[in-house]
Length: 273
Image 1: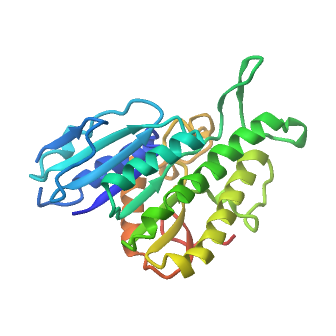
Image 2: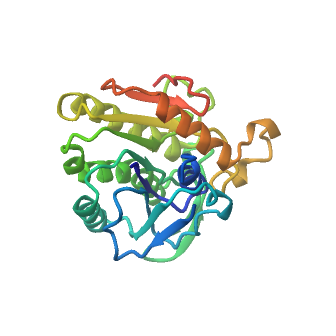
């Protein structure tokens, strides 16, 4: 049966992915929430592993009526290097065959805790807005953190079970598509993520032919991340998390293990780097 790992599982799209995955097989009834300390599960059941800094909601009730039993396991993580390694070691101990990994961590704006105070930050409109602490925070969350997860999951990949890995990128990470400027930290972080994934795909094509890497642009989705910027988005271009999650699941199923990094949008159209 299938096992899905969702990292950054508290985001709107990640929650929708968990709901969709739990409902995507029509031959199963109840959703079983497994306590954090109980990771050994019935291998005859599908499993959804959710990793998040915060507590997570239960799988939506309307997704629980298909007759299929799904294990839902929630693992807390503060996303420090030590806890990322600990999470991966724990997963590897109990789950040696993961079919799909979604890395959904991402930040565009929010609050930044410094030694002196807590302050809000937003995408830069001009170069004078650049701030080192904000740049480091955005780069770490959007680029370096996914790389650390993949680094610590190489022992899992070495077991040769076919696995597709999806990292949430963005169209603004495309250098060739940058015609508007602005958003320095966010653009740079997504471009860095793309380069890290591209470099990994070259290495993985030699070492882990069983792994497919995907950089995914979800489009403007109705979520906390995009909320301050939705005013000028046409209604038909503001997507629900449920729509994006189903599009992504369909795209993932359609892509082959070709040793390449696929950089695609919500409509499965290729984005140029």
